[in-house]
Length: 224
Length: 199
Image (cartoon, rainbow over all chains, first blue to last red; front, side):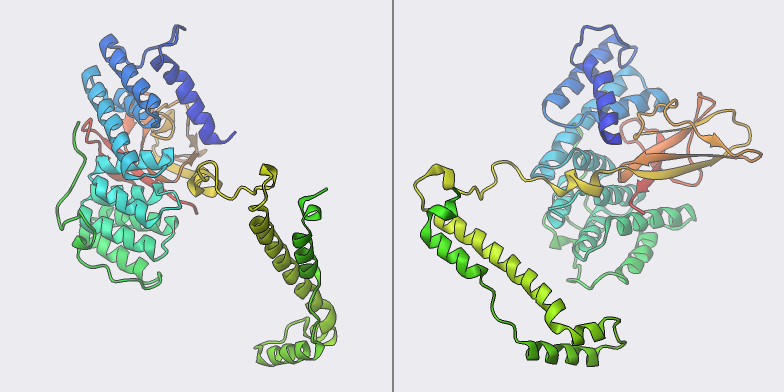
């Protein structure tokens, strides 16, 4: 059994069983009984909809362990993630994997719009898009405009950039920003470096080349 | 008995395909010699190929032609048997279930070992916590370098973007000073970011 399968099994058996209203006595998701009931309902509904529940469970744990958030805020966060998971699945159709859906929801959280997700999927229909979406999410959350980041990532994918090259691009931008560089400048520099080793492709024009992506405008996640 | 034994037309077609075309040894020698001249550096087996063109090239010619014959035979079987009235002879060509996606099999579905390092001379226990281990400090304790200040752990993580941090002495959450930060839009707090790819 793969490591991921074990993790999923543990998550589902440990917290998913509580979400399903199992009869066995077990610790609630949160101490607040009302919040716990709501979280259980959210997780159950998400699982029944065929969506991955790990992002919600992870957010709940993060909220408890790191953010020390009150129950009401945890519930709101869980509800937001459930909504983004649904939007991501629709944008990444057909038949996205659980990893792709989770990455898509993360990208929506970072400020990438559903149209950007759809465009990434269209550029790479036969492979997982978890890595490109992760890099895109990081670029946008760092401050690179959504249209520029999405257009560039799509162009890189079409020209044969591997997931590892995209990862190196994202990590390079991060590293440069840690050194004090601005996001857009760091991205331009790293993009030039990657462009130099990829096959030449069709020139990436204005962001308007991609329908729905306008220059500087963000079609970010809609808060439920 | 197999279907080909029932169908005389199919049987004749398969027999014809099984018969191999004759080989032109002189033509083979001419091509090999020209290739040897064009080669930048001589290959080790040049002499063998020139001296025994019939043996090695015949083998590959047989393999290629046999593969082509098998393919054509299967294709013809599909065409002919589709006209048969017996339902048992129908060859299913359309997928009856959704195709397996590349993302669900192979390397794209495997976690990748990633090393986390933190410098901390005062901590007694350090753990990595993140979205890859349910933010559970007990799952990924870090190892302290004897005589040093470094704590490290290698964690298998699925490719993509992840948020994490370190838990010091089971009580204090701290970011990775070497990593980029990201603010959680739902909760307003920060986490360290790592993007994991295949090395």
